[in-house]
Image (cartoon, rainbow, N blue to C red; front, side, top):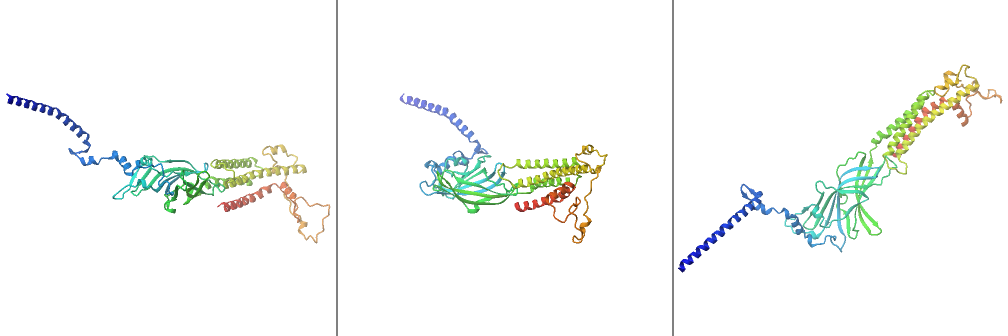
Length: 470
């Protein structure tokens, strides 16, 4: 019976073990199916690529980089080599474009690639093939970088399309390349005394904000070759040359700082202003001279022509002034515009003088009785405001007296009571008052002299102007 009892207990134990095994098997199978479902993206043709699965470590790549560079082991709020000499930081600039130059705001906008070079032994890492590692802006925020800023900048920003345009490259020996793509609007002190025949000298200045020359030494990485430019074409300026040089800046509270300069010279294209300003101004001045060939009795024609040229010159001057800064000195274009305006204005004044002298001449003829009795003065002046030569008898300019043509030694001397006939040419030089009286009595001579004096004077002015400012 003991034997039968032991056999029964053994069978019962075996059945319990079989039931427990059957109960755990569906769970294991289900877990395996779930695992295969999660790993289905590594399944090629029904097989699992376990090698590819083991290499998928992108989620922990940044953590591995921080561990490789030992970022958590150092205090990167302090500069490299703190307590020792100044850390040298090389600068390399590539100018991509000059976006705009504003004369009104006296500034320029430039887009450039700014590259920094320095060595931080705290970021050195072992490497068998001596390959560098490249990172983006996420790692830049966790290490020390130079605090370079643009002096006299008004606005600046780092491009962030599609990501922030920041690149950090770390070499195994601790050398670092830090590059950013930035657009900056900076002040340019312009001198417009020769505008628009001017040449402007602008500069972009770089400097460390917190570290003076005892802590950080800025220098051009490759000397004069540290500044490179793409082919830049501007609408109103021609870039003569770029130049890179360095210097020092002193602040009374913090000391001396290294400063780098990007200097470039801009020469303005004159052709645009010739078409928009100078040629129209010349034409208006020449047009004002047309009135000298118009009959002095055509008052409406000459007055309307003079007023039109004056108003046109005022419009041109206003347009030029609106596109320029309000400076306290005279510009070259102001000299040309206002001198031309003076010529146009004098042409109007010239006709006013001609009209006035003509009126005086005709009034004298009336007092001398050289006007027919049927002449109606009010009707003659009703149309244009002056007397008409065809309505009255105007004595022509008398010729030289015949007695003066003879030898003055043989001809009898005139009696002291006899005066020369009005308009007689005398051998002695006439006084200024006599010349004025001659012009008043012969008003047509004013137009005759103006036809020659105005063009010659304007030609002389243009010769002096272009020789002085060109």
